[in-house]
Image: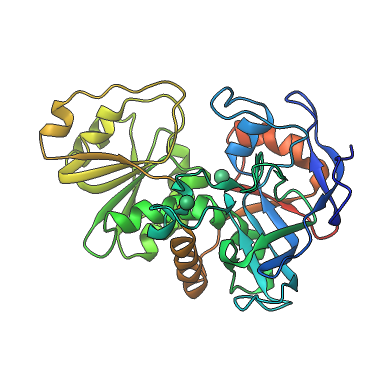
Length: 358
Ligand SMILES: [Zn+2]
Ligand SMILES: [Zn+2]
């Protein structure tokens, strides 16, 4: 496959041509490096479940899928070139790129460090357009990316850690932001519901913040893994007795479950003033009885990734503590198989594509 763009920096990625297609090599061009831009030689790119939804056009019509599509918004690489006015990065350093690659920079959201909610719509890293609303964006399943320095993150990790750093750019910040906002820390009891890509980061981050961490899961087989990741306790939510013991006991529940489920079951596990932060998206609406919130002054809330400043804060927090995602590194030829395994939750806990030799 060849894209129309002939100007700019020639690069190579892996794309799907339509929603039913398999991944195939794709030649295209990145924009030239402008004064504020950096060119990143991509080393690793994580596979996020939202890549699968968009590559298979499962979010249409809300989010139209643009083909050919090169997914990938969990990107780390080496800075290969910096523009004349770049001060944040030096050639040879490591940089990360997350879910969006630009925003207007001027609206209320952008000036409040929540660029992901840019009032003009931020430029998604792939399956979207740059802020000119013309130039298509292609993601991290590729050899290079060109991005404004203000929308790239410094990744101050050892090179050997970089595969596990890539998923921090989406799964990491998605878990970190609500945990931080709702006060996870010493003396707080945090439960993480669901132990997948998001949940395993939630456990590691909440434990590193100093909270007492419990994993809530319907799969008792996950108990050993939960504890290896840093959880102090495990509750099988299908076990009535275990659930009764845990009732009213948590300050925060990070709900990462994307399968259809009842929020009421989890709200009953919150104590007074408890908060359940939703980051998983069940396919259909979920109903909640008002009394499950009224009794105990409880809060149910959501959270979507994080702004650039908070994403940098999260990366620095992880770098200082040696926190990375648990990953399985794959060759680009394995992406289709990795998608099937991700759908089956058959991965501990994230696939990361090795783009170095691709
Ligand atoms: Zn993602
Ligand atoms: Zn904006």
